[in-house]
Length: 246
Image 1 (cartoon, rainbow, N blue to C red):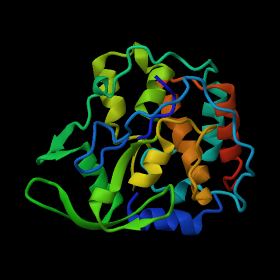
Image 2: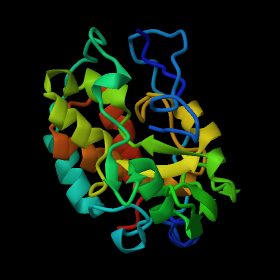
Image 3: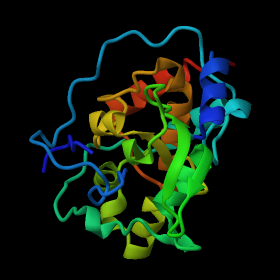
């Protein structure tokens, strides 16, 4: 299977984007909203684009839960084991149970939509029927929950390739529904599909002021779960961390 798989709150993210100089399930969509597309199992050549200007956001302006400071992220990144891309043999999104029930008829998707939105109204089945969401990846503001995906910061397939293949079902379920770390966020469906299951060396958020948070979030999740990184991935994460305000 190829590597490319075509698959918070507004105020908080807006404050991040304004203050920055430092997997999705669409409503009615598939298992993680990232249908497969042809591709290669090998990682592509890292991009050569210049990093964003102006630095990134300090930890205090973060929109995601469980974030770490830039200094901690650098330490975590240095400690991650570097390894080649792992095999996709045996991978299936179904092996990462999601979305899990979170109580009051709410599952993980609806919980994140409520957390990441402003003025979110739910129906009797906990479905978001109105609200406002600002997508961290592209800065787009949406008022229709159906246009929002819940993205896995470290995609399920990327997790599989970098260590999750050896986990048990309970650990994979935790990874797919983790609300305590910066692993889940509401973003536009279009930006989520653009990202697919690519790592930072292959895809970066078009909203460049989010790079600092993106790099720290990705690193924090991989560190928490003991996942590996490749050399190009580590290099791009370093570039992203370099945009953070000191």
